[in-house]
Structures are given as C-alpha cells and as structure tokens.
Length: 342
Image: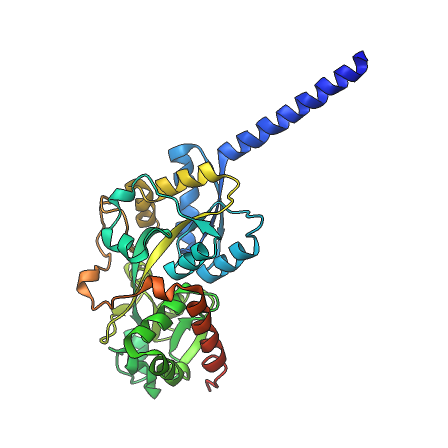
C-alpha cells in the first residue's frame, strides 16, 4: 500500500511539473506567420522580446500562402498571430473563422479611415498604395516611354519588361486585379490584363519580388506597393515611382489573432505591441515606408502620402469576400495566365 501511494504521489508530481512546464513555455513564446518583407519579419522578434521578454518564432511567407497554411491547420493551429500582408486574405480568414477579432489596447488611436474600411474583422497595421516601379534607363535603352496609366502597359514596346506577382500566391497581385475591376469593370479589366500579359517577363510568387529585378535592370516596370519601392530607391537603386493616371488601389495591411491559438495571451500581447508607436517604428528601422495605422506613431520622410495620389474608393469588404476573391483569382488563372507570352 505504501509503495502504491508513493507511486501515485510520484505521478501526480510528474503531471504537475509537466503542467507547469507547459504554462511556462506558453508564457515565453508567440508563434507568428509573417507576410511582410523578410527584413521586417526578422526585426520583430528581437524588438518584441526586448520589450516584453517573450520569444517570437517567425515563419515568413507571402500573403496567400499564409492563408492557405492557416486554413490547412485550422483544426490544430500552430500559429498565434498573422502579421502583415494585404487585407483581403485577412478578411477572408475572419469570415471563414480561421482568425478572430481582438480589440487591441491602442484601438482608439488607430486611423479612423483604415478602421472604417475593414470594420471589426482584423486590425489595420499599415496602408500601402499600389503603383509602378520604373527603371528609366532600361526603358530608355529599349526606346520605350515611361507608362503613366494602366492602359499604357499594353504597349508592345514593353515586351518582356514587366514583372508582377501571381495572385495565387500574392496578395499584391490580387489587389491589382480588384483595383482594375473597380476602375474598369470586370470584363474590361480582364481584357486589359490579357493585353499586357505578353509584356510580362515573369509572374513572381511574392508581391515585393519585382523590385529586385527592377533594381538590377532586368526589367523596366514592376507593379507593386509603393512603400516597398521607396525602400529600394533610398538604398540607391535607379527606381522611379508612378501612380497610374486612372487611379489606383491600396492595401490595408492586416494583423489577425488566429482562432484557437495555443498562446492566445501572448498573441494578444504581441498584437498590442505591434500597433503601438514603438512596435510600428520597428518597420521604419527595417527600412519600411508604409503608412502606419497608429496616428500617434512619429512618421519618417519618404512615406507615400495618400493625399498625393488619385486613390479609388477601394471596397475592401466586397473584394475580401471569399467567394468573389476566389472566383476572380480562378478566372485570372484560367483566362490570363495560360496565354502565350512569346
């Protein structure tokens, strides 16, 4: 009997130690899937740990790839927070109960415009404006003019000189499709994309990738968010930025709490920090020039100001609807992508 009692006490002690160990592990870590540039993702962990003592495990993937992974893991999530990336997939994740609404502590300080655009679905992290990155020397060498409008991209002089991302993996590319549909109507938008498809050298997996080829002089035109272009331009790359004359769309970069997160309290703490002025300045320190959502965040020179561009009234809720989003991407994959480019 005494031996039996000792064994019971021993197993109870083991169980308590395991419980305590699990609790301590949860107090020390937050798992983040990150859909911004690699340098910004890498800067988050050290800054958050310094501020809170909590470790951050980061996995960096493009926006649509992040959504696909979170969807696949929905029954047993490995991530606690989704940081960054275009808003449409964040909206879809919320609608499909992959993520859940969490009101961050600084919610009242966040941009009223950004909050109004998305409602209580995800937390606005930043705003980015869609535009053209131009390498003037490449265009000049080919005798091609600088494009000023979306319709200019169909000019045969740009054959093989354009890079844009693939909407099956990139939120940037879907923002472009949604923008064109809102400006021209769906059928005309798809006809336009077909017309400049022949000029596309490559459809990249990531929305930020075109700037690399642009800076190297491998292409003359890259379609992506302006703030990513500003970063490369400030590093000395020969890049100019153009806003399309017909108007352009924008993203409201997302921050979402994963539903069923195993480290929920730490995830909420990370989100609170991420939209604080200190957390948002980490992006600046990593060379990011998107407009932060917290109106109290001190700004730096070079951030594209929405007031300086002709922005459309981008309907984030409508074009974040999963059915519409998937239908438009499927249509692009079926009607545009297979067309010959040579």
